[in-house]
Image (cartoon, rainbow, N blue to C red; front, top):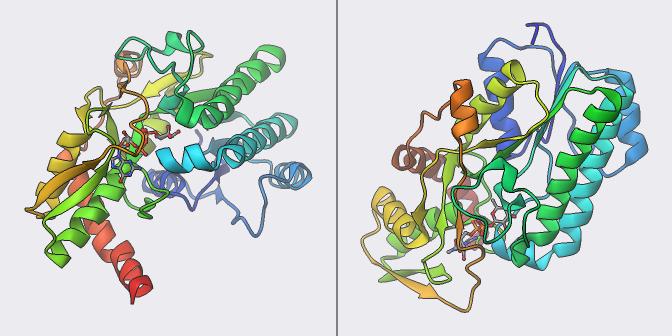
Length: 317
Ligand code: GFB
């Protein structure tokens, strides 16, 4: 990327998009473009097209998406498939029409078959049935991969996709119904500590295994891919290590300083039993993460204390 390249970050105010803006600025990129949802509705095809033709960005990070944890995915199934399909189609097509030099599309590790061998290699895509709780979201993300591949094959566009593992960090959603597990556990442990509760309640059996990546590492990996990788096959982004939800709950409790117990609500879904990415392709290209899980949870907890906890308390009062 030239230092004066015009870079559009779609989804700049989300957890991933804001980490990308931060990473771009830290590397000296100043010609950044973004729009709030009020200024540009990404579900509106004409508005997206007009924006791209007026701004003509050189590089695009497609980090705009409707996201959420297992219950949100399972409950708002229509919203998750419709919004994610539409955003991807509108942005990728407009990037093609306006002649964008390179686009990086962010997917998700839930694109892989529920019972695929572990760790998940990129070539396992479309080799089996998906996890039912997030099938609509996964189908939309698979469609986005295929959009990038297809514009590359038909029109020679440099559109690349990456599949991040479960992410967490500053700017995360800490709502107990719609969030992912890690921010939910930070909030549950914090509130239990403040209230001096005996235990927190964790959804499911605690047995599923998940891999977690700190969002600044993800942003760093996206910068690396934007600058060094121009091939068609998409790339996994993860740390290559996982743990059970029970182990995660214990680790979060330790970082937060909650000394009570953990009980499991087995009426809530477990989701896919294991989701560990094979990250050998990205490692072979020369990228690896920097932030360990315990340090990352401590950073995320500090952000929660500074930004999210006051809001949560204000809502409760
Ligand atoms: O993070 P999570 O919602 O997403 O849940 P997935 C991971 C695991 O943590 C599941 C358990 O087994 C949950 O049952 N869990 C335990 C909890 N306690 C909680 C809690 O308080 N809140 C939440 N949310 N989970 C999502 C997909 O799957 O991951 C998306 O639905 C996307 O499509 C995203 O891929 C990264 O890892 O199961």
